[in-house]
Length: 303
Figure 1 (cartoon, rainbow, N blue to C red):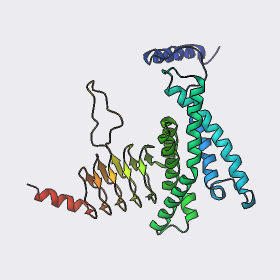
Figure 2 (figure 1 turned 45 degrees about the horizontal axis):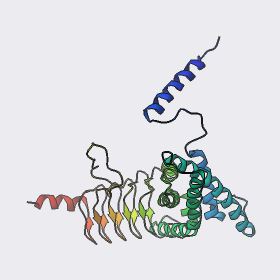
Figure 3 (figure 1 turned 180 degrees about the horizontal axis):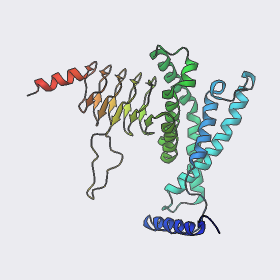
Figure 4 (figure 1 turned 180 degrees about the vertical axis):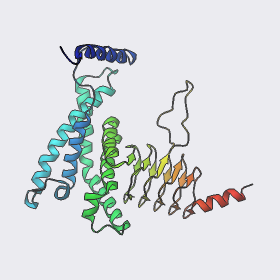
């Protein structure tokens, strides 16, 4: 006698899946995989990390004389795998549109080609992030230590790759790449966020950066900082409006210390310093120094 009635559970799960598909107006017709794979994207990102930083994030036995060969071989494998995932996303997004297979293929190929062409620029941006972390942390002994060990840099490698995919019309792939880093580091950066060069997240755990946030050059954040939305506008039917600017703009050379919460489409002016554990919902002028004490004093003298 079987310990578990697996067949009954299988049938029950089949029924639940069909209920979901019917509620979402999806076909019950047999077909292959419809959605990109987290496991595939995780492997692709590891390959891309090796191609971007072969002697530090590549295989342990790699030698300088075979560096270009390794990069070429790894990059070709990663881009071919990425193309397969891009095909799935394009087909999913355009499933209600009368597009021919050749048009779907052309969209996927074009996006991955443009992504590949952006990789040298992504490497330069990441170099600026690594250098910012090294220069901004007295505990950092070398740029190599920063690249190998710092969770903020791992999060930014994922973000720079994810943001490129996001801009090329592959937001689901981008979100998966971002969430892989979120799971490893506790740093949650939406792939739509625009982040300039020389960005440094120190310690990092609990940092949240929303989709429409805009961050300038040489900005430094500490752990548990939130760049979030203050409110969520709805349409006439009560549904959340998507894509509206709702997160902060952080100008160049701003420092935001641990636990600060910055909400809404406000601007932190160039060179401002935001102290720890403050709650800000209004714009801050350039060069300002905002602390809990200064906010309390401002409230005390307000009419």
